[in-house]
Image (spheres, rainbow, N blue to C red):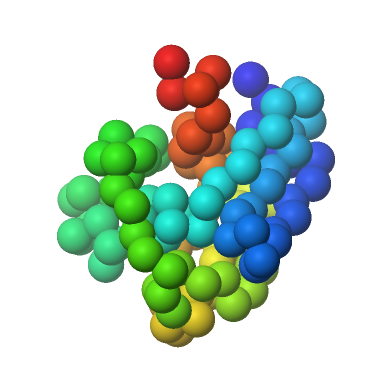
Length: 111
């Protein structure tokens, strides 16, 4: 699987981030899922709980619309990841391409 995006777009009105991957797959991430899956050490509960794959529990969490789930901005991290700043000021998670592809919530990827 190619874990390199061809394009990344965010819609604040739809509250979702869309990644079109170079292999043709398209992943649509609700902002609440991205925040629930934040890969930073603080959100994971320490460095010992950080993994290259997202925790399965994030797929069953529903986070309400709040500053914590409202995207403020996205920035690239080199050629391997993005970081997201949320309206509550949180901006510590580095979402690498592998993590984001594993986080894809579509039925094909979740099967």
